[in-house]
Length: 258
Image 1 (cartoon, rainbow, N blue to C red):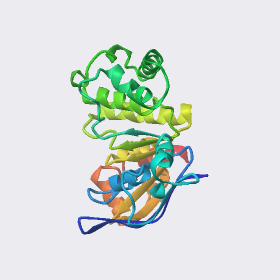
Image 2 (cartoon, rainbow, N blue to C red):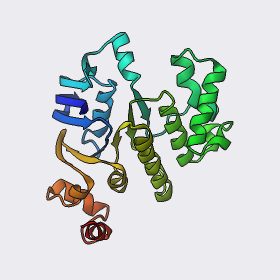
Image 3 (cartoon, rainbow, N blue to C red):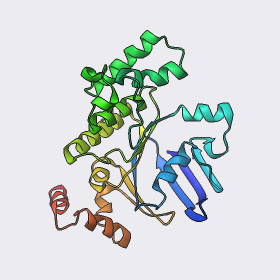
Image 4 (tube, rainbow, N blue to C red):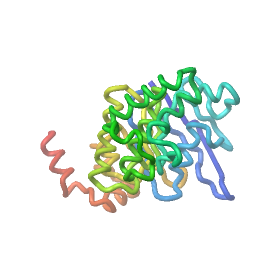
């Protein structure tokens, strides 16, 4: 069942067409990874899902709600279905880790301060961050900041999580830790995830489907096993640039599965 749907969405920024009649569907419960070169429209697509941008043409749907036309309280209601992990984690530097994670509960729910902080501690413990709760963001590594951002993103038990370059700037080991957390959330909580990323290794590890956007249009959508076999030139360029070819480890993996 489709949960997010783009219908012929177009967007121009600075006189340039960024999205050009984009059609895209994300299924309920899947992790959809969106790849593309810089300026291809990945982040603009993500912003349209949560109505940080409005299309010039076309519509964006979240379930039965047309988010691209929603206003006021209706838009706020739709946005409550989402959690967002921003590229730089977007933590407030003057708040502790625990305060950062509890903030959405304090601002948007009737929970008491004690209840909000108790739930924040639960989320931090689930992500292995219980010892960091009284620290400030500046005291944390980039990977730990991303995990705190993820704890905050799930604090309201969202139906959908949007990830903007979740492994950007992280070393390979920490990147794979973030991948495991994303996959764990899908399996344990059944959330639907949309992941904008340059990290093809990450996309192959976590995605149920991978899409490639080029010049504002989707040029390929496939499951990981089919994606690495794609004959699309743009996809082949991505694979070769990140040293993923059927001559390498992925070919061996295919061989063991068949």
